[in-house]
Every structure is written in C-alpha cells, then in structure tokens.
Amino acid sequence: MLKIVVCVSGGGTNLQAVIDAIARGSITNARIEAVISNNPGAYALKRAEEHGIANVCISPKQFETRGLFNQAFLEKVSSYQPDLIVLAGFLVVIPEIMIREYQNRIINIHPSLIPSFCGTGYYGLKVHEGVLKRGVKVTGATVHFVDEGTDTGPIILQKPVLVEEGDTPELLQRRVMEQAEWSILPQAIDLIANGKVTVTEGRTVIDWKKA
Ligand code: GRF
Image (cartoon, rainbow, N blue to C red; front, side, top):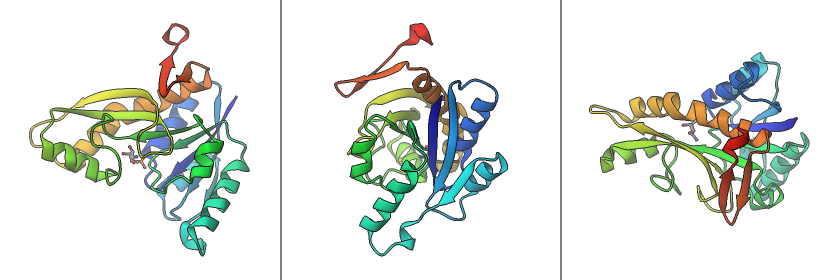
C-alpha cells in the first residue's frame, strides 16, 4: 500500500480528484496518510477533514528563518513515512534536502504542457495568461517528478487541452483542470502505486502493458 502525503496551498480540487479516485477504485494500492498546507485558510484542509484524513498547517510565517521552516517541514512530512509526496497546488519551494531524500518520490501537477509555460514565475493564473498572450492553440497539463530545478523533473503524464476563442485565464484554468489535471494526477498516482513507472536517465518509462 503506497502511503501518500499531499501538499496543498489552495482550493484542493486536485486533492479532491485523488480522494474520489481512491474511493471509486480507479487508484488502487494507495492511501492518503495526511494533507499538509502552508496556508491555514486553504479549503483543501477542510476537504481532508471531511474525509477523515489527517490535516495540518505548517507555514514559513511560523518560523524565524527559512532554514528552520525547511527543517520543520521535512520533519512533519517524514513523520508520516510517505512513499510518495504529491504537490497538488503547493506554492512553497521544496527544500533541496527534501528533494534529495525523496528522489523520484515527489510529484507535481503543472497546468501546461512542459516545457512550455513553466519554470520560475509560471504558477496559477500566470500560466494561462502566458498561454493566451502567446496565442498557442493547444495547452494542457503535466505530472512530473520534482528535481532540484523548477518544473524540470522527469515527465510522467501529459494531456492536451484546446484553447478556445474568447478564453479568459480563468476559463482556461478551469478547462485545463476539468479536462486534464483531474484525470492525469490520479492516473499518475495509480501507475506509481502499481509499480508501472520507472525513471532512467532523467526520463520515465511507463509499463502500459501491465496497466
Ligand atoms: C492547479 O492548477 C495546479 O495545476 C496548480 O495549482 C492549481 C491547484 O488547484 N499547480 P487546486 O488547489 O487543486 O484546486
């Protein structure tokens, strides 16, 4: 049974998609041990509470230095002994010691087709604003392992979404969630939980035969 810790900062619709997928059996061999947020007001914490999942807030604001927060955050996450850490809209930079300790065991959902519209400064609505400004006709979402860079780790799954005439960043954000994020994040977790994802030389190989 894969033990998961989900880290969130906001509404938690991706968290909800994972909770629902586990409940209906489209994710197997996995269980959410805890939900951790840096934001005490995150609705995601309520979602966890409603489903009887342990939920805690740990914020950089509670600590004098970033180093102290990083240490406490790592200790909090590790107290749940996770096999997989899922960043589902988590707006805090993951400390390097944690990335090293959990190599290829931290995944992130990003709302574009990496390597487009990703990296420093591309988060939340800014991603979709960039997409509309550039005028690309296809965007989407990516689930990837987290490495020391920003959105540079091995890609696990991607799904395209069409940009439509008259889109606003908000409309596009919602469509990318509905048509891509909420399906590929649970799917990636299911693949990992069932031993179908391996990482070789910075790229993933998915064993679809067994899927
Ligand atoms: C999603 O768009 C995700 O791709 C990004 O942050 C947003 C989180 O939304 N990393 P939610 O909190 O899951 O509703």
